Image (cartoon, rainbow, N blue to C red):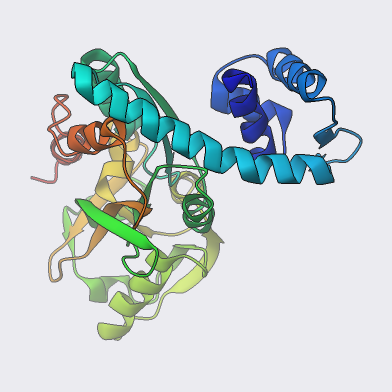
Length: 309
């Protein structure tokens, strides 16, 4: 069995897409197609129905995918055990993160692990929170980075960061010159919200309800970037994590005001499958996430740039 081709097939099966598998493997799409063809030639069966969109696994492909997932987990555990004898930290770490913990925040950590542990093969991609939990349970990723992490049942959680939430406004907004606001001052304002299915939306609504505040939700989106674009063109104010506002505060396209009367944070956690063994490579990645990224700390830099100290 060709390990590389089998891993590529599993990526195709996971994403139901050749292009997404290519991105996940950081190779070209033709290379993905070639690897699948070689694998099918080796075992003598068709694994993927290429005529469907999105692509589908054949009956043989479904069985092969299920068995290969377990085989790859066993292989990585064996590989990890062997590496421990030499003191070498190596292996693949598959991480899925929510979109708002983007490349800007993760880049320093990724650079650190590649510098300190060059034999670790890190695969980082981004997904909706529900998709991250599903992929964890299906053993498609080793770790997930989510907000308001679950901790119970098959999911375990490691605390990571508490991100301060602040009111984001356009510089032209009446609150655009304020460094602090009370929750009460949001009453009656146009508001750009997170989608109703997200935990952060429910937490925000609870904050407003406790202060007896009613806002006019003009738009709702499932990601921070789109919310920021809406606030920039003054479609409403939003309550967002300060670390996600770094670029906009630097360039002056948004202003942020801290809450003067409440402490509202978004907890980030590293989730994993509770009873699954974490490799040494995965453990080292978690350790590095808990170190100072060495770039001036994202939250501190944003606060200084935004004039919020």
